[in-house]
Length: 52
Image 1 (cartoon, rainbow, N blue to C red):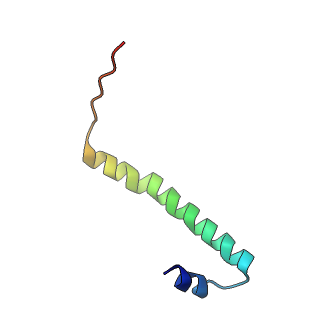
Image 2: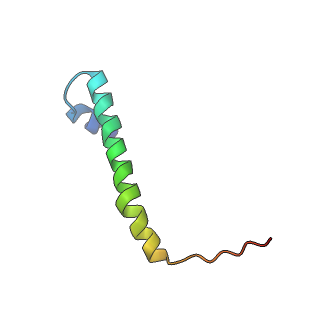
Image 3: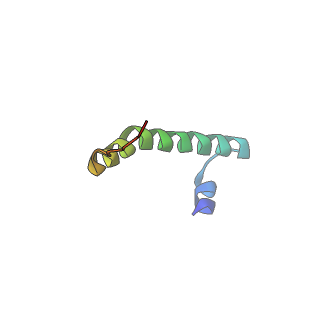
């Protein structure tokens, strides 16, 4: 899979690495902003007990 992704990216090696870093950053941003809050709403509130 990674080999196929590497082959379809255009440009020299430094540009391919830059594109992969940007794609990873966008994927992480999407997870933090949409996926993780959605999963948190499904789990419900967590009650914790912390003693003094």
